[in-house]
Amino acid sequence: MSRSLETSSLKRKRPEVDPLGLVDAERAILNAIKSKKYLGIWVRDIKHETKLTDHVVNKSLKSLLTMKLIKEVVNIQYKGKKHYMAVEFEPSKEISGGVWYVDGNLDKELIDVLKQLCLRCIRVQKVATIERVHEDLKKQ
Image 1 (cartoon, rainbow, N blue to C red):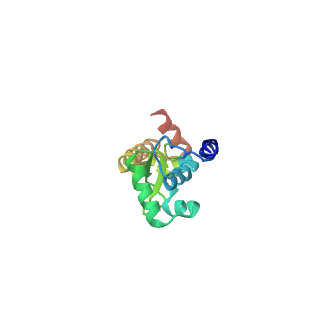
Image 2 (cartoon, rainbow, N blue to C red):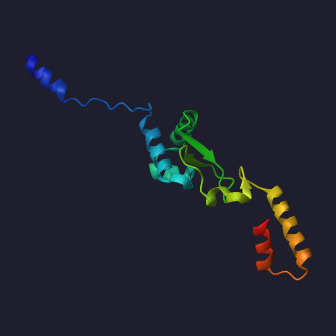
Image 3 (cartoon, rainbow, N blue to C red):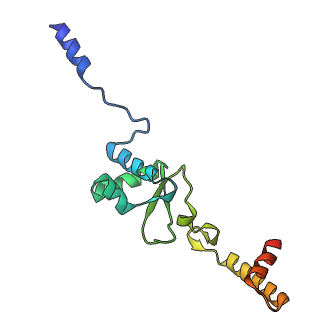
């Protein structure tokens, strides 16, 4: 009889231990976020892809943020919508705005400096074309 108990215990599946200690919902959300790489993903898209409830998604996102596995990023096109990205990725220029934006805000200092440089080029040239202003800016 002990032999049948040994074989039945061997047939039971052992639970897989997640190295990060994530539950299934957190793992599904993390995989959905990582699949978007440097583009990030909107909360609503996470809910749609994972088919999880609002409460579970919000709780899991909070947990993943606390564990520093994901980060919230500012999408300059949709500032009111929360986007998430895995910490190992940097936002693309389409998301962050490139050199024109700093921390999701328009870099007004850079724009003012460029505006002054353009005006100076135009004053010096008197009759300026965009190509000549561009060439002068590249030289500086």
